[in-house]
Image 1: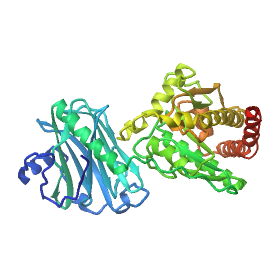
Image 2 (image 1 turned 180 degrees about the vertical axis):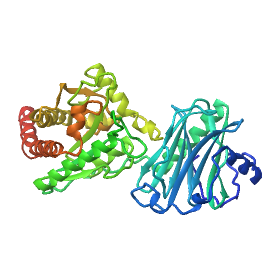
Image 3 (image 1 turned 90 degrees about the vertical axis):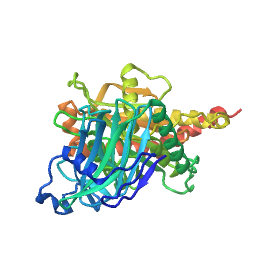
Length: 437
């Protein structure tokens, strides 16, 4: 089951049926971490790097070995609510800290194997909530979650203990059952827009928060590049005035893949555009944008690799991938809608390519298809644009904060708006005429 703990300093809470030990254990456990000096007892205040100005600052993250497994120790400005969860396939431990942000300059990832922990990462998960994800090389669980105060600083101490595979699977299944029960089976109603409403484009900047995406040669992060580009496209669409625009995220937060699709459907979006930027360390001369549509079979091996990479975003952020279920009867009822949606998606992909072609920014194989999870809305035309390669100096230049990016965003916005306002209606009318007896 998922756990929500609100633990007072030094007070021990029994988790998963394990016995509670004395406070001396935790003080000894903290000896694995760097000593706390008087200068570290000051409130974090503005040092927290969370843009939401969150109340609790995480000042340091320690993953240490203690002989029986491993331990996760966080230095905090004060106590915070803690939620933990076990995920399987692949095995991970997830720790959520609502109301907490990470102090500037502290490491937010590690790849050194420590006990059952093979790697870890941390970052913003959603507005007002930070997350840590521990990848596991062996089945393990968080035995307890406790606070200890040292020299005026709060330490959150979580011993991590190895468990049998059967026990791990049992706990992961219980957590998943609780999570699905809390979320409910209803994915949310589709919300058709009023007939006189402006068509809505849902822009989807990929990755975000704890999931940084691809990295450039100088540390540029995909999540930042695509957000900046999406905001530029949004500004251009709003300046045009003919189209309403919404975004799956407007800050450095993570949105699960399935939720991105639900957001588009629940808002009655006429078009869903997901923005990404890839990296190829071994082929730095490869450049230019590619536009993807949905297909059960990838158009080529690179498209298959791209879909596999992007579909792992939930895994990186400590989210359990949703079951890929068939709609049964809806397969028949929505068959025509799906066909029309895919037709629209192919046409708008060609329109989007025109904007990049104008700037000589297209990849040599620009039109591709693969099984991207974010493109699976049956009734919303959807495309995924790989804006370019963060490992290519030319692409980085135009995707940086430059007038060239603004010009490209304006042209892309124009192509998308023109599709919705003119070409989509023409295609629908043509399809209806063809279908008529």
